[in-house]
Length: 73
Image (cartoon, rainbow, N blue to C red; front, side, top):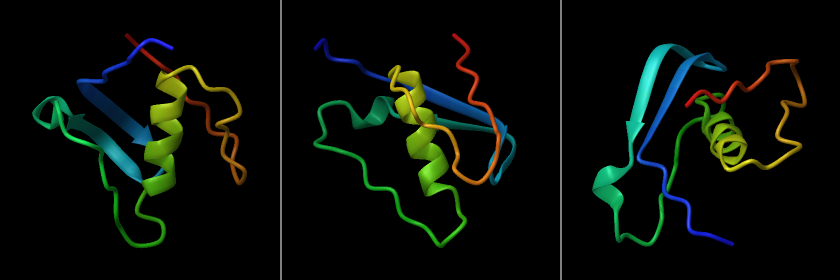
């Protein structure tokens, strides 16, 4: 499998993320990983779902809602 690097991830009105939010991963180059923490309902699972959708994984739909993930280049 080829290495995939995501530099920027922008979410807009998705799950608990209202408005536009951009995560910049460029400063993490060469680091071991990313730790995501937060309270219940803060959006940790939504971030994982979006990340997996960008990587082309299937079956990342929300179990509670019909909220589509739209990947835009």
